[in-house]
Structures are given as C-alpha cells and as structure tokens.
Image 1: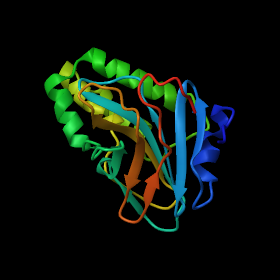
Image 2: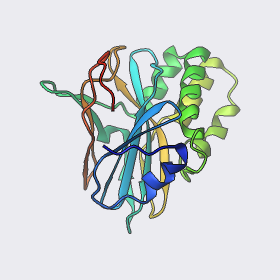
Image 3: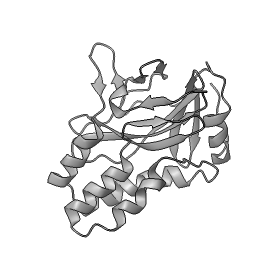
Image 4: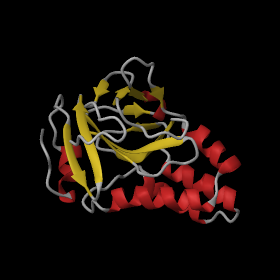
Length: 209
C-alpha cells in the first residue's frame, strides 16, 4: 500500500498516475481517499462523514488526462458487497428532488461543511468544471427548501462530458436506508472503462488502510 503524506499530493494523484495504475490510498484532512487511473482518466473518492436522510455520500473527483472527451455520471458508480447486487448511486435529479421535499438547513450545512473540508483542505487541487464553479448559483436562493435544492445541485456530481485536460468534482449519493456505506468496494463502470477500487472494512471494523 502507498500513502501520500499530505494534501499537496492531491494534484499529483489526479494528474500524474500511469494510464493503468494500481489503486493508491492516502489520507488528507481527515478523509481517506482511493484513486485509480484507466486510459488516462483518474477517479478519486473518499467517504463523507455526513448522511442526508437515507443517503450516504462520497466525494468524487475526476480528471480527464486522455486525448479525447470522457463522459461520466453518478449512475456509473456502484458500491458492491459480496453476496449482494450492490447499491447503485442515485441520479443527481433524484437527490435534488429529495432535498426539495425533505431537506432542511441543518442537512445542507452539515453536508457542505464536510464536502468543503475535503475539497479546500487540498489547496493545490483545482477542478475547472466542478463544485466551486457551481457554488455561486446556490447563493441567490431564499427559501430554505429551495436553498437546500440549489446547494444539492452544486454539490451533486451531475452527468458531464469532460474535454481533454478538464476535471470535475462532486458528491455521489447512495440509498443505504440510513446505514453506513462500508464492507464492500466502489466500482465505476463508464462506457469504456471499469474502475475497481480496493475493498473496505465493514462498519465498526478496527482495520484501517
């Protein structure tokens, strides 16, 4: 296992891995990340400590280092556990509708705080088509529930077609019925590649990366 010692290495993880690298695991600002490259595209993720209603979430960053455009969407992400069909991530519009119906200011503040702690704790990482570029749109909303929906639309990873050298980030949500997302592995299946990350310990397991 490889560990990178600090947040300054985040850009290195996203941009400098070989096209068919192994999974690299590292910690930054209290979050445990895994990162993997396929065909010049790098995906990195970490579990967010905050759940919203029945959904657990992960922070995702995607960098397109290939020579052509690359499309990725939340539904490409599945959390697979042995003996089960796994949990497929919810579409971004599903999360926005849920927060419009059930969201409150506390939910949103906790989620944003957890997300930004991971994102801004890595000052050299700059996403040119991600959360920060969407954040301003959420500020103008006045209604509490609409603010929640607008914040979710900024946070949630939406379907995106990345041009070469473009990158994005966002939160991906899994309906876990309020349980912790643990004891399996993240698998991302795009139209052209499969990213299979390392297995993780079950909830409450004393093991660590």
